[in-house]
Image (cartoon, rainbow, N blue to C red; front, side, top):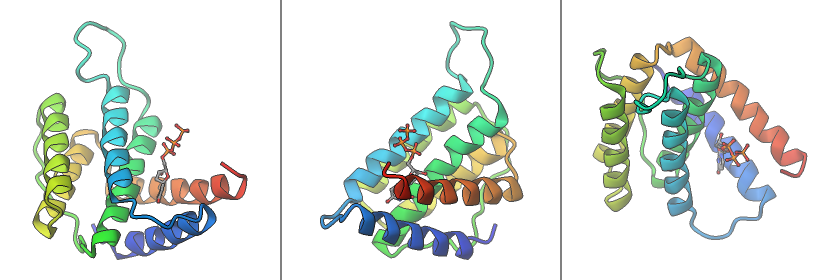
Length: 160
Ligand SMILES: O=c1ccn([C@H]2C[C@H](O)[C@@H](COP(=O)(O)OP(=O)(O)OP(=O)(O)O)O2)c(=O)[nH]1
């Protein structure tokens, strides 16, 4: 998946948010924690680990919105550190979701401890697997990203 357009949209959104909230300090840790939380919110909506319950996953649009919140913070962290992901690729392999969520938490924590391009790419690969295992295709992700990106502007404008 081609990512240049999304990186550009994210750069503009970040500048808008940081301007409107007058952010003058380094928010790398804040964005990193936000990413971990968005990942957990997605896991929670899939309910994949809730062996104690018979209730199923939330509807696909709910999962997709949680997913693209993570994508916002992934793009944003890359922009902060000068890292890219020109072609988003990964494995097309059905795996156990719970294991994949834990592994993704692990690679995010690795990146936070040591923010390198290699660690950054590893997170993108995990998110590719998440997308594949949750049946999101490139077009659906792009559409949902654009929609949430617009919503984020509206929220800033309405004093969120
Ligand atoms: O510098 C930033 C800060 C935030 N966001 C975006 C990412 C995400 O899409 C949204 C924050 O997530 P969410 O919408 O879940 O925010 P929340 O404050 O947790 O929402 P709620 O109060 O509805 O739970 O803001 C950015 O893109 N760049």
